[in-house]
Image (cartoon, rainbow, N blue to C red; front, side, top):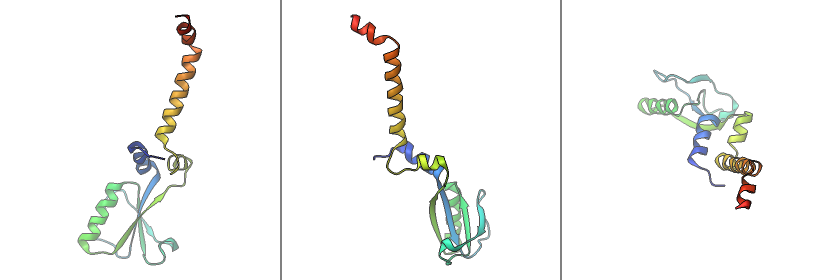
Length: 122
């Protein structure tokens, strides 16, 4: 299904987590990063992992790594929450779901408001 810009914004804002794996600690870190020891999911190639939901902080850290010539890899993971499962589904668009629900409620309101009887009397 076609995804709108709003759907993609929802993914970036509420579903995606930026993870940056690296071996050498840089001199400084941007604000908003969570640093931890890397586990087996990095393939035992990287020692540290920085996690953030902010694209800006991830981009700043990548620029620091490039300036200091540090090898790194950046990955995007999905959060494991109910809301992330609803918004992050690749087979449906949240925007279209909201549009269809809105049309349904407008049509139900139109039917039960008596407007159909008024139109049929004309």
